[in-house]
Structures are given as structure tokens and as C-alpha cells.
Image 1 (cartoon, rainbow, N blue to C red):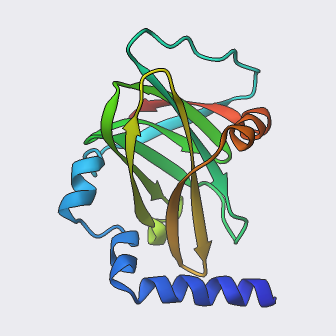
Image 2: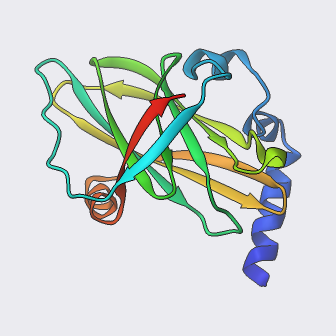
Length: 177
């Protein structure tokens, strides 16, 4: 009970800050530059089979994006993933996706969509990526919800955590609707 109350106060505090306005999904120029069109929607299926590491073409950089659900009352969190203004896919319920980028500066966006109409847009999280040739990058999107409000986080994870998440997550197969 104490943990749930603490999470509720944390989320309420974020909602009352200027940053909280961005987390609630209000359109801002920076957010719209990194995300894809707000009207886009995806269908996501989970592939539980073990996948070999993707082959990375010369001159490209591999990025993993893991969706990790924080277990406040939550189910059905679909998270769209955008790079430099284009959606590259989506995740759903403890899945991950991979995508390739060119070396250089990129702007990542994750935007959660809830299953319930009242939670249609829970938040946007943004991150700058300075992709270096030959490197692999891993990020975790977390959707935190409690009693009708929510935030979305996007954080880098180190190689050890990425390996663990690969072993415990399913691959997301997403297609635009």
C-alpha cells in the first residue's frame, strides 16, 4: 500500500510540473520532430522464439528497444517507437524491437497508447542518440500508470541488462494498421 501511494504521489508531482505536461502527450515542437505522425497506429504480435542477433550491414548501427512494464495496474500498453520523425515500429507487453540507424545524432521518441479510451495517450519520452559506427545501443521504455494518469520513460541500459532483457522478452513484430 505504501509503495502504491508513493508511486501515486510521484506521478502526481510529475503531472504538476512543466515536464509533466510533455509527459501527458501534449504536442510540442521537439516531441513532434522526434515522433512520427500522431494518427499512426500499429498492430503488434509477440514472437517468443529465440532469435539470433541481427546482422548489421556495414555503416549501420543497431538499436534495441525493450518495453518493460512497471506493474501498477496496467495491461495492454502499446508503445510506438520513432526515430527522427518516423515511426519504426511498436512494442506491446514485455517485448522488444530492433532497428538500424546511420552513425550520427538521432532523436528517439516513445509514445505510449493505452488500451482504455480514457488512457489513449499517456506520454512521450525523448532521448538523443549519438550513434557511433560499430556500436550497439539498448534502451528501455517503461510505462508507469496509476489510477488514470501515467508517464512514459526512455532510458539507456547497459550490455548486461540488455542481455538479460533479450532472454526474458519476446520479439515484437509490428505492422502499421
